Image (tube, rainbow, N blue to C red; front, side, top):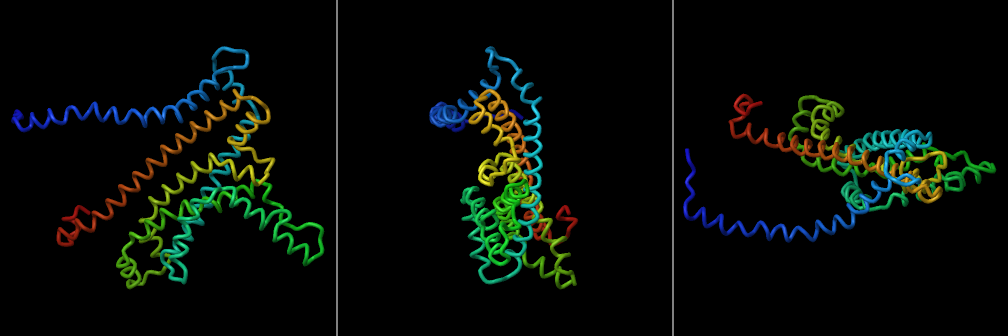
Length: 315
């Protein structure tokens, strides 16, 4: 069948055609600003990473940095702390989100709103709060020395990898809770009441009814926290953990303390590559989570239109 372009269609095409160059002109200023503010400095970092101290351009700086023990240790610390903090934030965030969403208690709504405010806090503020509570001269150690007369308190873990891990779990848990609370708000109470009326215990209701709804959001929140933990600098710096060197800390050390700008750029480029890969993973998981939620919402409506027959609904 051959499509026939009527005069009205041709007139519409002529009217819409001049809009394309105009749209390009409108897009040029933000694209130019983005290139100047973000892409140009990033290109300079990548170019500097290919420039050895003896001149020229080669991959020698990469081979030198990759062969360094400090880089391998920083990469291992970064990955281990990021994975540990992500796992801790997922477990703690899931438990807290379940309590806030499904256990009625006074102040539950206010606590849910506070989570949105908590997301705006800087990371070093949480670290300072932990140092005030559990630091060497913090409140907990002060109470211990006052009660026992000891010279020092027993808590001295904030300057270790465990302290960094605790601070990151504390700070990033709300980043997991926020999407979980949004997902839990979509769970229909009728499903919970039906499961309870059939004799299902609370943990079975959580496992069979609530968790399937929460898994996509849990995966998206975990991927986001993993990206953020990989690039976290303030928490590691403010805890004062000298033995904990991550990739961002290694960039700071090479650039500011050692004056090795080429090596710092190499580590920065590697860190950026890891972040971009994890961000692509996060976007993939988030898009699949959104598709899964739309599919679950569409399923009951399709079944309702088909008279409740699962076979007619395509189940």
